[in-house]
Image 1 (tube, rainbow, N blue to C red):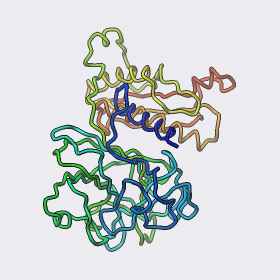
Image 2: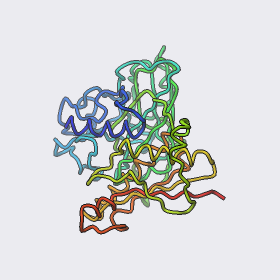
Image 3: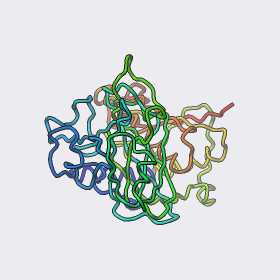
Image 4: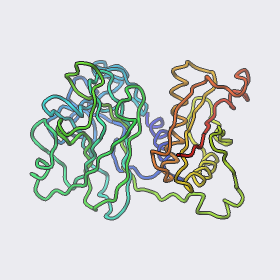
Amino acid sequence: MYNQLSKHLNFIACTFFVCTTMAQNLVKNPSFEEYVNCPKRLGNFEADVVNWSTPTEGSTDYFNACSVAMGTPKNFNGTQPADFGTGYAGLYLYAPDDYREYLQAELSKTLVKGKKYQVSFYVSLAERSDFAIKEFGVLFSKDMMMISGKKELSKKKMYQQKGNDFNFMEIGYSNFYSDTKDWILVHTTFTAKGTERYLTMGNFKTNARTRMFKTKRNAKQGAYYYVDLVLVEPLIKIKALKNDPTDLKSHQVVFTLDKTHIFENLLFEFDTFKLTAESKKEMDMLYSHVAADSTLNISILGHTDSVGSDSYNSKLSSRRAKAVAVYLQKLGLSKDRVAWRGNGGKMPIATNDSDAGRRQNRRVEFVITKRE
């Protein structure tokens, strides 16, 4: 279990940053793998999970493959495999009468004033949710919060704790809120005030102020989300290729608009979506080209060979495309300029009857377009 999680953490770290070692994650038990008790009932998250708590009386849930009643991938709110180990959290971000659930964790150390950090996590909307919301709230505090009640964690309630200090941010995304199949990466960067020791996640707004939409007709219940792999890390400054004139002189490339290009050094091993150091050099070059002209957008297209089911290959190709898109975003390309999708194994460029042909088909392509 530990080795599997470690591999995923290394993938996340090296997708976000150009680095030789993984950035230090300040969240203890980030993927909810360590537990006191294998979960047996709803609402027992705080008692079951190591290094996590709930700041209110809302009954956050814990799911783990060790359990029948609260297992993975199937549970009372739908089906969701655990991508990072065997456990994940579940909570209502929107429910009748402003009912809310939250996650709270103590960081391994207090954040440094003026230093930039990144917070990231994966979410997936439960299949039986009637609603989906468009923002995810992240709150850092100096002290642990213990608030009575089960409704939204408002500023009024937070400031009842005298002497506590807060740093709040809200992440609004166009693609995370309604996906009930894949784990979607949610992340943002911020500058620390120097008092942040606790992390709390959830929806801090009332129902009336929450941006949401119905996923089903005659909706009456709520928006329930699964959460996994929570990271808070110092933001490592990336030196893009454009800052190194020597490299640019030896790597002059002309990209034709509206043409499908293939990453030459981004051919994946079977059943993987890990980026290599060699492939990152090529992506650095692409970033330098697109970042130099604010009117350029880029679409990333992932592909697989023909081995495996169509549904699995579609998911794998999406992960390959997403890995590239996230890397470009972390270099500095804004989210609205990068799109990605997976095409599975339906568009081969070589035969699938040989190892060499299948390797060529396990590729990622990109198309550069110019806004009018």
